[in-house]
Image (tube, rainbow, N blue to C red; front, side, top):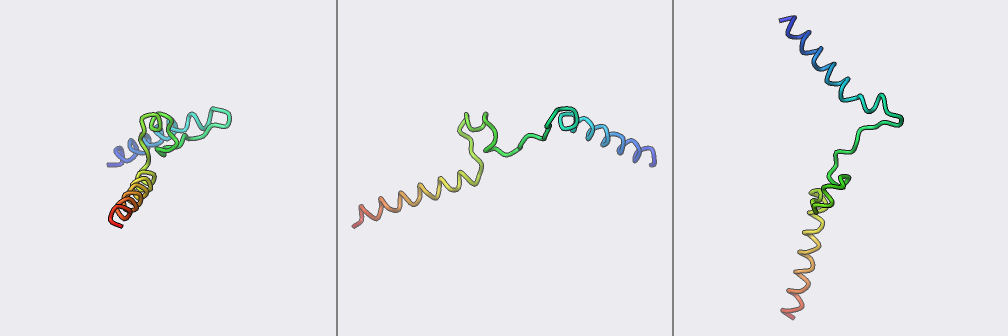
Length: 73
């Protein structure tokens, strides 16, 4: 039981050390942003975050409602 806990703590410590290599050894090193809107590859593919997609859908719905009102009047 104790061996398992020690092994688990050791594995977690090694993982944290490997994850922080860029931050520790690179001048002005920092973790990169994980947000979709900060990824150039995602923007190139036209993939947006859910907040942007919701905003676009609401704008399109408003435009559709305006057109519908113009047609009915």
